[in-house]
Length: 453
Ligand code: NAD
Image 1 (tube, protein in one colour):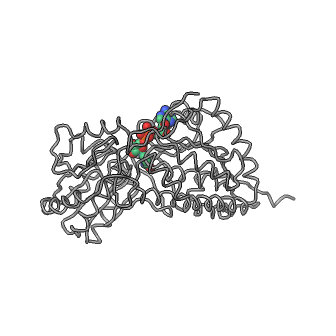
Image 2: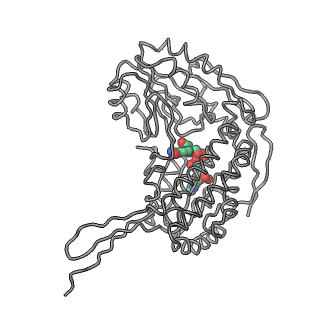
Image 3: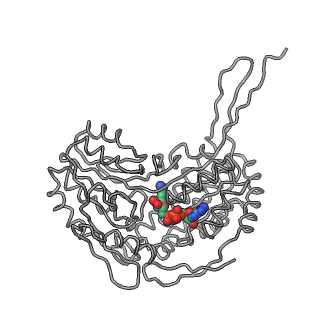
């Protein structure tokens, strides 16, 4: 096993060191998961529901601890981190309703009775990125466990601490040993072994499109189903008939939240030409008022970027571009980066690539058709917003934009009650919402002959 150091991105100081698991460790974890899953799936549905409710309660009792851990490991502002930890408990509570509701169908057929069952896959491997370590993990593990699977979870090396703690809390809550295991290590070793291990029967991957494609290709070799939640370059479309004051006030949260390290970041701001100048005037004070600083402070809107390397890659996007204005950021040892508003053309790199930092590209458009064309002028299709007071336009544009998660007069994307996921290069499959537990099952059809002589 090799050792690695976990860094606080707000100070660049080490927090702790952890061991990287090797292939043999993954294989041992999967073997334990296989054994645990048999007993879990054999439990009465109500007993699985109770166990998940108990897990949710223990997470609720540790919201503050988990939040503080995320502040240190990820630099998330404490208000956001509390929301994230609370969200994990809510997701667990929501899917604790699933074991008792995973209903099959009774299908009318001649000569007998036909029934479908939702059978768990067995062991599910979940691979998580560094940007929202707790919440994204829970979108996989809560419905997967509810459907009767065991879970092996690999957090990102940069941000493993809350996932490790959630693994401990699962045991404290009484979940069987081996049912939910957190395996810390590198993507190419641990993540790759989830893909190649024959007993991991489904993989959920959230991360970059490039790695997601290779994970899907590996899963195809074993005919293993895979859910992919990948990158984005989402559009925030502001029409001339919008409430411009509200739309401008919402922009910083839509793209600078989590320092822009958000797959749903509205990193392209499309503004109708007739209100373009006015909108930029309204936007400037909103960006200046966006408070970047100590993530432990309640008053902070945005913390640092996750690493020095990532800050370099974000900064490179500002080379030679037309920066309209910037917000502020602290100086000092953390990986700080002041938000930037860039005036762009559709072909510019800043308008095409996922930067994953607090940089928004502003582009003008002429009319509704032009807005739809520009919004769809990307390989991605994850999220997006449409600002208009015209109901017909809101319906037309939201149906025409090829994205999985859209909001009108809002920039919210994540509600655990509703499906989440991307089109095009942003992913495959959906998480959350009422059907997520079913996505962790295979349908079995059983025909009972009744017409035997
Ligand atoms: P990444 O693709 O580098 O890594 C994601 C995870 O995959 C990490 O745990 C990593 O260790 C692992 N990994 C790396 N190589 C692997 C391999 N060959 N096989 C198996 N696993 C491997 O992504 P990142 O930099 O951690 O996260 C940022 C990306 O995630 C962005 O593109 C962002 O848009 C995307 N993302 C998408 C969503 C969504 O829901 N659509 C949510 C959050 C982040």
